[in-house]
Image 1 (cartoon, rainbow, N blue to C red):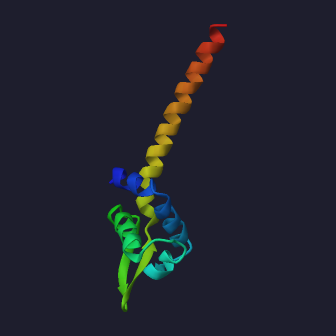
Image 2 (cartoon, rainbow, N blue to C red; image 1 turned 30 degrees about the vertical axis):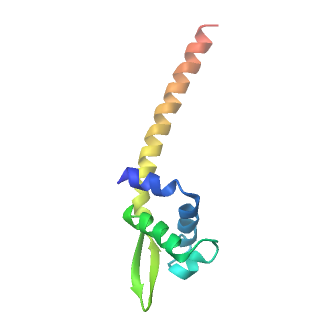
Amino acid sequence: MLDQVFSALADPTRRRILRRLSRGPASVGELARPFRISLPAISRHLRVLEQAGLLRSERDGKGRRCTLQPRALEPAARYIEETRAFWEGALAQLADYLEGSK
């Protein structure tokens, strides 16, 4: 699932969709409005986000309403934090080593 989240986040259109959903639920039409791409293309982006667990869509009359699922980002945030901590430690050790070799 972590790979799916990072893959979904790799696309700027999908990140903009998630940013919009962070303000509240939206219809597919509302999500598509700022983009110059077709509704089928937006639907493909939404499908990727839904498969990654980042949004949930439900039937709303004739259309679909999408809601952000922020908890799906938690594993990615944990991975980034662990990786950051590792590299900060490794870089601190390198800096100590370089200071000691002067």
